[in-house]
Length: 229
Image (cartoon, rainbow, N blue to C red; front, side):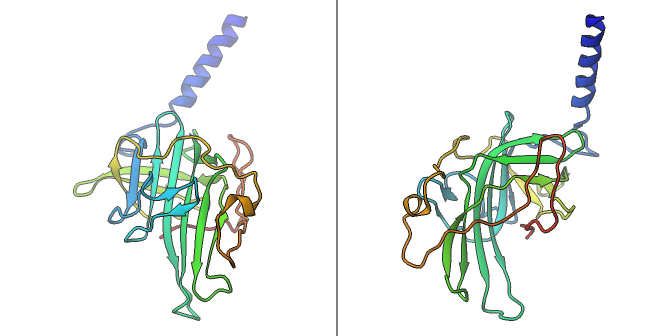
């Protein structure tokens, strides 16, 4: 009887693993490696963010970059602008970095769980505080991911956000992920005054994004911020 149960369990696990299929119809190659949108000005790795002192190196262009390892680690680098229709000169710039572990779910979605040392910088010349650093440690949920091969650009990655909106298309930069060490790189349990070497007028905020409860059922609240470019 126990042998029969064990055999059934193995078949169930095998069937579950086969749900993630890599074919030209679904995904032309694996997701492992470093991906970057547009001209590739934004890339993960040491050239974008320094978690030790919470600083950024500003790239020449905006964009997004995602990296994935074969053993379940990810890193995200994002640089975007948000325009203001009422005040055209009041453009908000956001530099965002985070990393952690990810899971490719059988239903084609991805759940990304951060280590807890992510951060971002907000710049707004029209705000009371023009520049500040805040923590960013939110679990992110992507409903689907697709990889196809463009005859000119090569492999392309499209990630669909929690509401189904696709992010900017990303090019495969390298199959060897360019990432910072896959561990917590900053102690976020301290107070903001001891964590950050900040100038007068700088403040630390905490954005409220939706969270994901569990790894098999993703519950995403409406209103989660979108980073689509």
